[in-house]
Each structure stands twice: as structure tokens, then as C-alpha cells.
Image (cartoon, rainbow, N blue to C red; front, side, top):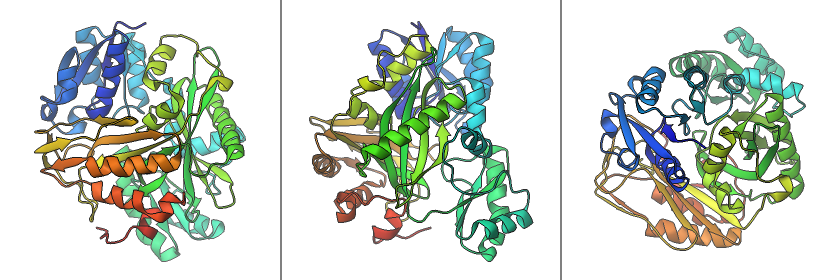
Length: 450
């Protein structure tokens, strides 16, 4: 097992990895920007190394600075967390060159899935259902217009290298596509270094369901059931559940086997997630693969009783999976709410100083947070300040527990999305399991889109 792990991330996920490493007797190294000099993850790690000024491009996204920190501290492994450099194959390659174990998949798998266009091609070859769309990149507006007419409006315009909803837009006519194409292409180029765009048929109000995978280096793979991630705003997840509110065991098995086929097609190892969209008739289609640990991994941990970070570490160290598919438990129901520092009406970031932070407690309640009372939420990073996770024997009990926990959650000094989360959880359609990607737009009232 590893002696020392450098965590190339910040906030709650860095604290999450530190927690498991400490339980396993592994020393940890934090990295930080000037804005995070006094952050919790910096104080909790055994060592900490400054890697640059506040902007992510000058600190957390600097592969050379991260690897220099690993060299200085003689870390023998590196955990990328999620976001930031976690899906950058250059980091995995730099680790390999430096003799540092990358706690994640091989660089080639990250690269293959990093291009949504390439991923669609590979999944088609592997027999995994994909959403009808362009065969590859649409080179210009003329090609986009012709493809959209062939597919039939509405269509989804997407950036090949995108994520988090960036460079993505639903368009319903030639006029809308003409207006959207150049703007989204330029935005994608600014964020991801590539303006490559493609089109998919837009499915009206589908469910967003993903499958957690785990592959060891000995050729064994399992799926750890599914997560429902349909409650989204601006294509970003807000509430996740395990298992899906759909409750279809046959669909779960078919999606799990398709996800395993996807992983095997690219020689995947370690933890990863295959995301699907599911239409009203129960047909599912490949959306993308996240070649890292997901934000919402705690709900899978809650229903399986597994520590995914520990399994990541053990797999990366060369250990075989300690169970097969038949050994994966499914116990009860878990729900996660993402707590954002944002205006709950306008859904815009709300930086500032957290004057008071009081977290709910109790059996089956888990808080993964990256802040405390007195923490400064800066405009430099993602506004998510924590995650609230509950686990109960049934979905109904989990909803009740989440409603109570949200009522007990207290944050002062900044605005948060707590009122929005409480409104969603209390809504009859959510309680009935009618969770689709259109939920917030369709059911949540008193909102003002920016």
C-alpha cells in the first residue's frame, strides 16, 4: 500500500480523501492556492504545499506545480479528486513519468472519453446505445444546420470536450442554431481548448441515470448500481439518489451490463461512471463517461456500505477487487443535496464570508463540507460548499430525513440554495419519483433565470 498520497484538489473532496487515507494509515499532502492558505483541507493534511495564486489556471490546473509538490514531498501516489485536473490525461502521464501512481484510470482511457465525439464512436462500436446525432464533429454552421434538419428539431448542441453544461444548448430551429453555434463554439474553445461541436437529438424531459463502475487491474469489473441525477439546473446536478426513483430492476441490470461493456471497450481501471439518459419508454442512451470519482459518490457508498476512495486506493496499488457482482449489496435509499453558495432565486454565485455554519446531525445523516464558520467563499472556484447526504430504509423515509436535515442546516453571511433544495424535496412530483431533467424548469416556482 502507498506510503504518502498527494491530493491534487481542494475543498470537500480533498478532505474526503484525507479521511480515508488517515483511516488506512497513509500520510497525505495537500496543495493550495493563496486563496486557500487557511482552508480546512490544508490544515487537516500531514503536509501542504503552495502551488500558486488564486485563479485555478495559475494554481490547481498547473500540472508542473502539482508534480513538483509531489516531488518535494516524496509522495508515491496522487489522487486527483473530481474536477480540476482529474480528467486531464497530461496529469496521469506526468505521474507515470515521475514514478508516482495515479489513482485513477490510464491516460489513454481518460483521453478517449475526454472527447465526446470519440466516446460516441467507441460506444457505438462496443454496442452501447447512443443518442441519434452527428457521426462526428460538425465543422461549421452550414454542416450543423444540415445535420439538425436531418435529425429533426429540437437538437442539443454540444462541445466535444465539454462538461458542466458549458458549450451546451438546446435549439429548436434554424434561427436558434444560427444564433447559438458560434457563441457556444467560442465558449468551448475558451474553456476546453477545443471548439469542436456536435449535435444530438434532444430528448424531451428524460431521466439522467448513471452507473458507478469499478475495475481492478486483473480484468475484473463490477457495477455498483445506479444513481438518479435528473434534478439539474443549467445541465448541472443539484440532487442525486441511489437507487433510481424509477425502481426498474430489469433496466438497472441492462444499464449495468452496458456500462461494463463501455469500460471494457477502453481498457478501464479504477472507479468511473457511465452516464445515460432514459426516455419515457425506458430506452437508455450513452451520454458520457466520467473517468474519475463523482461528486455524488456518497449515495453509492450509503447503499452499498463500501468506501469508494479506499477501493480506488487498493485497486491502484494492484489489489484485486474483494467481491464480484453478486457480492455488491443494495441496502435502502440515499439522497444527496449539493449545497451551493448562490442566490436561490437567480441561481448565481454568492461569494462572501460564512459567519455561521451549523450542520444537521443524526443517524443516517452525513455532511461532506469544505468550509466552516469564518471561511471566505471566493469567486475563484466552484460555488459548491458542501454536500448533505441522508440514508434510510426506503425512499419515503429518506425524503423525510432530508427535509428535516435541510430545515436544520444553517448558513449565515452568504446566500445559499437551501430554500431551493427544500422546495424541491417538498414537491409532490419529486416525492412521487417524477424526477426528470426538466423538473426545475417545469415545477419549481418563483425563480428568475439570469
